[in-house]
Each structure stands twice: as structure tokens, then as C-alpha cells.
Image (cartoon, rainbow, N blue to C red):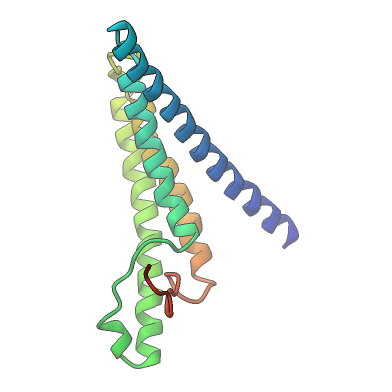
Length: 165
């Protein structure tokens, strides 16, 4: 069991470090692009496309991180009025749907990534599959975190008692 926990912590760290590194690189590229355009009246041809690819990857990895940390919003207005057992049933159903979404992303994301492998990103010259590979990778994380959520209470963080301002 300790080995499994260590493996999960390592996987969590890989997700977080990768997303934060890609975000930092994206910000740096955009700063260079704006600086270059304003000062030298020259924009590198690769900068806009690379920042777009990094944005897609950061966004998709953020989806997975949101499931891990229970950060996605949930509107429970109707569900919260139901009896406790029914609420647990809806919670379990939502977790199964998340796992289904992850499996859907893996399967169809992989197919789409393979389909797009023959085309290239014009500014970078890389296969388009580099961009679309974010879908099945995120699907793997969403599936794993969805399975983990099955063993935890609740699907969302509870922010009761939080005041604004």
C-alpha cells in the first residue's frame, strides 16, 4: 500500500511540475514575443503557435488537477434538498461519470491524436499530434483521480462559512 501511495504522490508531482513548467515557459514566450514585436518590430513565427500549444496543454492538465483537488464547481441546490442516502447515490453517480469521461478522453483522444499525426503545425513544423496528445494524457489523469474520488467523501470542496471581502 505504501508503494501505491508513493507512486500516486510521484504522479501528482509530475502533473503539477509539468503544468507549472509549461505555464512558466508559455509566459516567458509571450513576454519575448511582445518585447520583440514592440522593440524590434519583429515577431518570431513560432512564438504564437508554441504559446497556443502550451496553453492547450496547461489547460488540459489543469482539468486533471482540478479533479485531484476537488476544485471543479458543483451546483447541488436540488441534490442538497434530498435525503442523505439519495445524495450519496448522486455523488457516486457523478464520480462514475468522471471516470467514464476519463476513459472517453483516453480512447477517442488517442484515436484523434493518431489521426492528426500526419499533419503538421505550420509555425513549429511539429506533428499536430503534439497538440492533441493532451487529450488522452489528461484522460489518464482524470480516470485515475476519478477512481481515487470513489474512496473519498464528496466530489467538491465544501466552502460553507466562507465570507466574501
